[in-house]
Image (cartoon, rainbow over all chains, first blue to last red):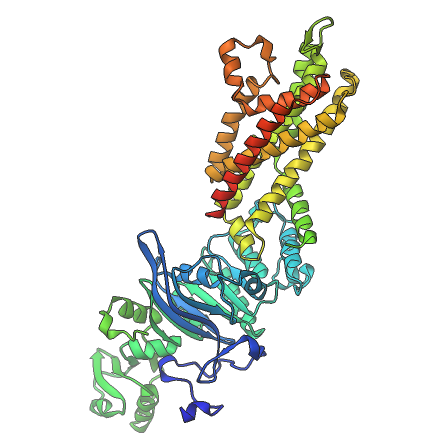
Amino acid sequence: MLRSLWPGSPPRLSSTIPDRHPRTRGADPREQCVRGDGMAAVVEVQHLRKAYGDVLAVDDLSLDVEQGEVFGLLGPNGAGKTTTVECMEGLRHPDAGRIRVLGLDPSREPRELRRRIGCQLQEAALPDRIRVWEALDLFAAIAPQAAPWRAVLERWGLEEKGRAAFSSLSGGEQQRLFIALALINQPQVVFLDELTQGLDPAARRVAWDLVRSVRERGATVILVTHFMEEAQQLCDRVAVVHRGRVVAVDSPQGLITRFGGGIRVVFSAPAEQDIGWLSRVPHATGVVRHGPRLEVTGGGPLLAHVGAALIAHGMEPTDLRLEQPTLEDVFLRITQAPASDRDER
Amino acid sequence: MRPALFAKLTWLEAKLFLREPLAVGFTIAYPLVVMFVIAGVFNRPGEEIRGVGGAEYYVVSNIAVVIAAMGLIALPPHAASYFERGVIRRFRASSVPATAVILAQAAVCFGVAIAATVVLLAAARPAYPYPVPPSLPGVVLGFVVGLISFLALGLLIAALFPTTRSAQSVGLVLFFPLYLISGAAPPLSVLPSAMRLVADFDPLNYAVRALQDPWFGYGITVSNLVVLAAIGAVSGVGAALVFRHR
């Protein structure tokens, strides 16, 4: 407790926040729910539950999103991600549980909330014949603090499409327009639900850059995805959602370290070379040889130790590299593991 | 919602309406063409329907066709498509309530119906010089009550048939039979008695008479207005209840 009063106290172990995570971006302290550990939670969800008829979409889901981070909700289709986000946006009313976004209750104060959040929805559209500039103009008129639509048009690379009808836009252009609309009121929290659904790889890269620039402007981003690479590229922290619950929360790297089942250092060496000393390298747990290919399994700073040992033994392989488990491996392990193996919250 | 924002939304909806060929064709061009054809056919000296010449009868009656086309053909698929495709969700997520969007659509339909009626009357005047109605306020009242009633009916269709296709089909399927026995096509006096019995349940029949009575010198018939108002109120409340549950 004493340590947590120290301004520079390290983040809690249960949810490691990477150092690049900006924590102090200009938030009005009155608006934030400052928790005991000094971190400002922009979004708080406690014991959220929502059923559609007999189908339980969200079952006792809890999470906190902190100021300025890109927070991912990762899970398979039907895990309850979109329902959770829609409850945060005030588009659905929870059956039970407590939600605060910027200190506001989305069900009770939707107007005040929506002034300060931006939403890109999974299933939404604009009228077919609306022109791009008309949509931006209308949505800018909704928010008093909005950026002028001509500037927004340029910023999102849509200036040549200003007079184009919504239905004539490509998937990538429609998605860019929706992101522009979500950001036009200069929101403090941005919800992006399946941002890159239906985009080709090039458009996906562009969308990722857009998310990074949103974060750099100081907004908190909540990103719903079932796409591992996206979570790994963009998110400071990821909540793995499975069957309506959060089953793990950590940075993507933290999840990989905790649940990935170890790393492998791989290189090539002539078959006749004596490599008995390799298994004694610190952090190594095993050595396997497949012809010229050597694999050292282990954890922690294994690569550095293997590298140092190789130099010490006069070996300089040109293909020395680290092979990590991917977030996908982690995800499959977590969602297929029995309940007792998970860190339930 | 701020009035300026509602005005902007309504202006945008007006532009969208005018970009919709089916809506424009059915509410502006179709009544005009039908009026010219039927008024031309029945423009015979000495023959009267409800005490007026055939041409005058059909010029006036086709104002009701504008009303019916607006409520049954133009509005339902447009409103339903906003729910079906997620346009309403998109607006709601930015603090524009569904009610505001739907009311903006209805306001546009109201305005376009007035414009279509002005076009109809102006175009008919040189060919069929009809007299100015003896009770202009009565005609305006009949027009307004009939139009609001049919717009409410259109919203009820959109509420009950929430896909563009189904709302459009239902609207079209209702439009033609209701039109044929409303008195705006063959006059009621030539309908067989069984058909006339059915016509008593045709809302459009009441809209036609709410326009004809004050125009042809029979004064304002309160029962027509009451029936239309009742249909409008029931439809409007029904639509609001269904929309609220979405």
